[in-house]
Structures are given as structure tokens and as C-alpha cells.
Image (cartoon, rainbow, N blue to C red; front, side, top):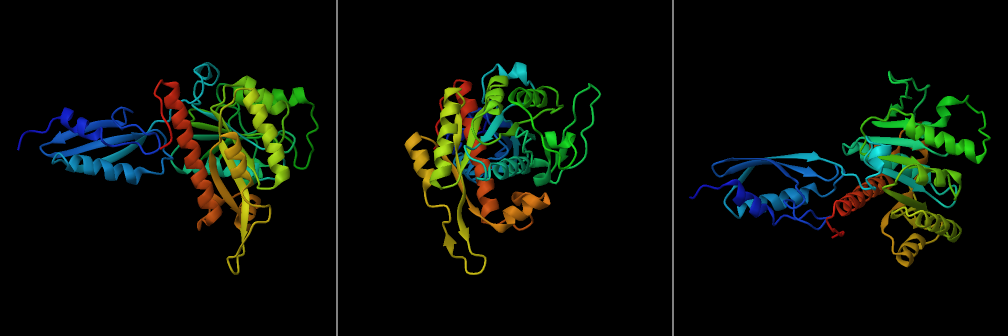
Length: 358
């Protein structure tokens, strides 16, 4: 049998597509550390996000491509390199943070903070380096939802050290005010606090910084969009017409500020009876899907209403971190994967490679 060389193997691997990006893994420079020994090979696949949900598909196709040229895959290792999806100017503003993702809603009470917390934790569970910024200055809830307490310390460089829980670095104004004290601030003070959290917190190296915005369209959203190029925004709504009307206004605001929309999450899509399993669509049906279709947006997922979500939020254990994940946890993990995939597509587009979701 003729000797198999690296060029032959790489040519065979061009048949392997990254399922979500629609390009082959050689063109995307995902094949690393290829080593050959006779007709055996070992290599590493460097994913565009550690949250990639389709590793099994890639591995299957890699093995099939190598089998086709008579090469046995002895070892397949996985790595990940999250690319920067926003404009290059972000490197000067936040050089150590690759992607800033805003989570927003037009209306309060739709579960935006629940989505923010679980999105951050699910991304961290995948192996990504994640931060979470509580930008809801007058209604900060994230410390309780993550089970985080204490007062942040100062780093050697004089910056604020975020508090880490569930492998997520968190900063919130709640850490700096007495329990139960209301925060009654005008717009400029709110904007200043958000800028300080971006500028003066020792975030370290992050793949994703998730920013939980207050509901509506206000100074907080404007401050964030002007302070740092956003990789994208996630819009959270329920199927209810009132919520949809308000989230449409948030959508218009982000578009006016040229912020990319990653997609829509429909929270509280239905309620499953814990006794009989019957689904009840308390807030209506299909509202977010209609909005997404009308506005040309992606549906990132539908999250059912479950008591475990409320219990986890009160206890500081996000539902995606609970031992026995139910439908809501699985849906939120899928949302995290969808967000990561769309950011990878935007990053590839920024680098000059045109990609679409397969």
C-alpha cells in the first residue's frame, strides 16, 4: 500500500462539513496537530465554539473520510477557539473579551433574566469562558439567581474582581448596596455604572460577556450600544400579544443602533402539568414564531414554563445546573448552542468568509 501523506489526508478531510457553518473543516482551519503513523492518524478538531452541539456528527464524518482512503483514526481530540463576532474596534475597547451579547426584552416579567443566567451558565458548561453583567441597575436580581453573595475585592491593578459562581464571572450593583435598599438613580448615573462595569472590572479573558439589560428601551441600552460594539442581541418574549408588541419596539431600537439580532427566545411557551403531562399554552401560541417570520429573525428556542425554573432562580441554582434537567433546562441549553453558532457565523463573516446556517 502506498504511503499516506499529510496532503492526502487533508484533501480527504475537505469532504467533512461543519454542519452549522456550511464549510469544510480544512477551509475553516479546524484541523490541527495532524500526526501520521503508517495508515493510522491522530488529530485535533478546533471547534468555533465549545458549545458546538454537533461534535458527534463531525467525528462520524471525519472517520468516514479517513476510512475512504484507508486510514484508521486512532485519536481525535477536541479544542475550541471562539472568534470575535463584532467589529475590530472592540479589540481596543475590550481587548480580552471576544463577544459581548445583550439579552433584552421589551417588557418586564417575560423571563429575560432567567434566560440571561441560564445562557451564561450553559455556555460555561460547554467549556467557554463566560462573564455576566447585570445591567438592570435599578432591579438587580442576578446575584440571587446565581447564588452569589459578598463584596467584590480589588485586583492588584485596582480593578473590581467579579464574583464567580457556576463558572461564570458576575458583576452587579447589588453587591455594593445594602440588602433591601432601593436604587433610585437618573439615567446618567445608570449609564455611568454600566460603563464602569465594562471598563473597571477585571474580567480577564472571556469568550462571551452576557449582558442582562433592563426591560424596555432606555438609557441602559443606548449606553451599552455606544460603549462597545455588540456581537449581537437576544430578544426574549412570551407568546402573549402584549409582550410581542413591546419586544417589537426593542427590535426596532437595536436595528436603529445597528446591533445585529441573533434571534428570538419564546419563554413560557407552554405549561406541562406535573401530574398528567398535559400542555397548556397559558400565554397563547406561536406568537414569537410569527414575529420571527415577519421580521426575518431566527427562532433560538421555546422554553416551557416549569416550577424547577422558579425554584432554581430562588435558590441560586439555575435550571441548566440542576442534577436532573427537565424540558426547560434542555431547551435553554439548546438556546445557548444556537447563540454560539450564530456568533461563530458572524465571526466567520467578519473574517471575510461567507457562511450560512445549514
